Length: 310
Image 1 (cartoon, rainbow, N blue to C red):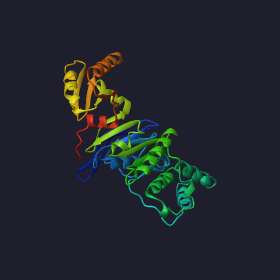
Image 2: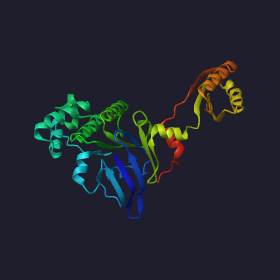
Image 3: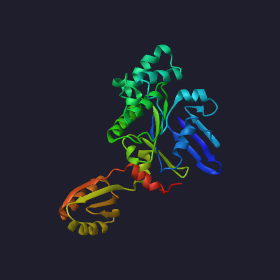
Image 4: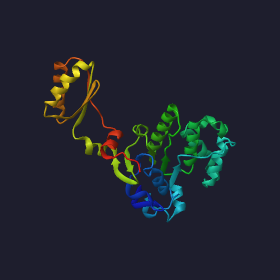
């Protein structure tokens, strides 16, 4: 769905994006991850056709960006990290204005507005003025406006910025709903926990480069190196003895202790894991829990990045 080839963007002699080869397949919810200054916004603007690359090529849904701008804008929706709204208009008037700007057929405007209001949870605010909406509702209104022309690709730049916890959860649910409808999404953020619940793939950027990309499950397999175990204990008196016992085993590595928690990597099958569990619980009192810790986006980021800003 989205392809880039040797994509670069320079501002005078400063490289914001360098030599990016990227592929995001149809229907993915892709998290664009990286520290501030990594080049995420510049990359999204180029994908949206709003910024001309210094070099390289971009294709979105088979459309070469720059060659067919009108066709691209029919396919792509872009939500920037900052936005301006017409506060004096009602929600309906605001959406009607942009529906006509997107050249939605006049006989379909009403139905289309009703559809995006329902999808974004704003149906009850149809007569409210834009200026009366909360930050979270304003963010949803911008997304509703962007969905009016039914884009197949949606680019969201730091969409949860400034939202309270409830609004963040509502935004997360909206993104998951859009993904379930077949929309391809790229969602940028430097806060990994914002992306963990809904992304199916990630693109990790540092200093203008893409340092790793792909489906999360596939990336996890490349860094796993065994089962990640976590043992939580009741008191500190147990920690030293259990750590010593674990360090004497050949099937455990990467043993680390933080207060009452021991993390380690187990190299064995499920039957051997069950035996280890039984041995630990029988030999050491005060074991509160023993479980396999699932890898997350944060684990992938920490494994492949240098975590430096540009």
